[in-house]
Amino acid sequence: MPPSTSVAPVHRRAPGFVGSTLAIARKDTLIELRSRSVILSALAFAVLAITIFFFAWDPTAVASIDLAPGVLWVIFTFSGLLGLHRSFGVEQPTRAMDALLAAPVDREAIYLGKLIANLAFVIVVQAISLPAVALLYNVPIGGYVWPLIGVVLLASVGLVAVGTLFSSMAVSTRLAELLLPLLALPFFVPVILPAAQATARLMNGRAVSEVSGYLSILAAFDVVFLVVCTLLYPYTLEQ
Image (cartoon, rainbow, N blue to C red):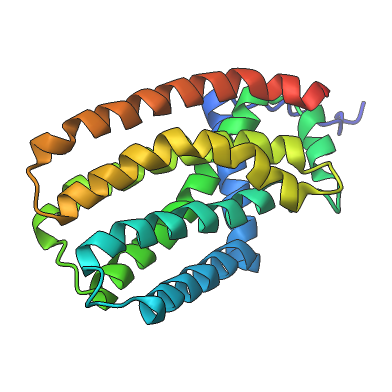
């Protein structure tokens, strides 16, 4: 009797929650690294905004330390919106999201994976914009660079958490480019205000202890937005 040539089927286990989250974040990051559409458009906006503010600035009327925090947070806010819009929009033409929803992946893992990828893109833009603003506006940040990075990172988590949720809601609408800022900007205000206040105080040479209250506010908003947006995301898919 000839030996059997049948091959036993290979059963692969579905990745767990953390594995699914990291896989989706990796997928979105690789897509962006191949196209570079989000990073390039966000960087183009950042360079344009820095240049416009610089040439419209009258150094005899407004000190650079008073202007730089506002310039930074305008850039961070609107360059982030450019990337958030593409977070789900990149999958619309091929309906890749339908395949992702059919896979054995938790809805919350999809949201968190896209949040991590969006956060990485935002941090890249901030890492270039922050020293550019400091150099062009002659604002020395060496003495408080780590507290300033802490403020920027805490605020970024809150902005991206809200923006990723609203991006998923707006992507299937005909006016997604207009709807996303209208939905997200009111929720950005509680994050941007303490972040801008803390940035201004650090740039004016105040002690780090004076901004600890703002850091606590940002951390509290991060926790609230992360939990609420993660829980709400599956319901947005059903609408």
